[in-house]
Length: 446
Image 1 (cartoon, rainbow, N blue to C red):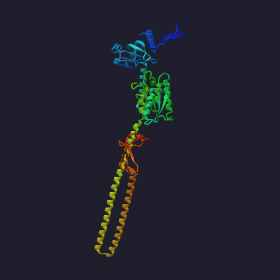
Image 2 (image 1 turned 30 degrees about the vertical axis):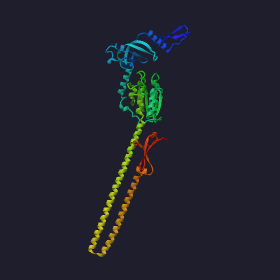
Image 3 (image 1 turned 90 degrees about the vertical axis):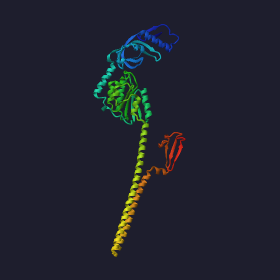
Image 4 (image 1 turned 30 degrees about the horizontal axis):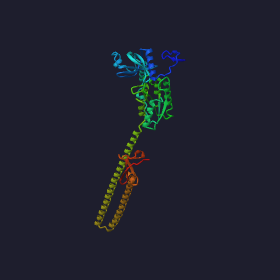
């Protein structure tokens, strides 16, 4: 005994005949479904909200209400039957409420039921209920100032750990993980698995936001990414829910939100500290690029090295100038003293006071000797100080380091090689010694 369920009345039709011995192919089953849909329902009128419209020559869109949706197709020959002026700009927009007439069919290639639209007209000037609710909440929260810059928190420059609130099996979380792996392996991602649509989504997202924020300090979480892939307004609605939006606004941890595609906007994105167009961009704005950081370090290292070299050269020049000045001054003073002594000697000799002359000569000789000794001591002391300073400068001079037996190795562009990871097999390198350079090729690295 076999009972076959009626697809549309849920009645059971009793069939006393045995099942046919040959099973149906998938194509045959699809044909029977298509025949059943068209034969039992025929042409029908349906009212609903336009979602995800793709309006070229042929129109493809989803017709939805708060609880269900169905894919629709309207061929170009049918599009031309729409009266001019029926829709602003000649085409319906996202969120427009319309009445369509057509037939149901089964699209065998993708195994889905869709409606083939023959007629379409506007259901009135009002937008769909979801769009109305969206606009009302946006207006309310904007008036409260929830979207203003004063409420936006600064994002961490170098986050250690990021919580990602999304479905753990989604393409969105895979995009975030892959982007993080490419940019900086040092960042840790904590994936908080939540349903992103359906009855349980709102409560789960609120709980996740509150729990992550409450434990952010103890778990060292520096930022939160809230994300999911694209979808219709209904599918994205959890992120427009007042409770979810309020939970995000109350978070003390910075939030980056990326909901749907770039053309989609959810209210949680408006209250978040930053809106990203895609999950990948959300990861990019939070996670620094390690390659860029290394380039910055190399740049600062080059500037520091250049500054040290300039300081050494300036110090050496100043020492040489001081040494020359000191030598000149001491020589001039010594010459002046000798001149004075000679003048005094001549004066005394001219007056012929023999005893006084001898005494003065003796005194003059003593003073001259003492002065020469003092000047020599001062010159020796100054020379010692100069030699000490010169020794300190020589100790940090890269050329002196090379003379001790060390060497510097650089690539063809002149960039210093610090590790075997910086070169590849077969690469040409140059080793700088105290006297000359050596050109070589890398055979292997370890």
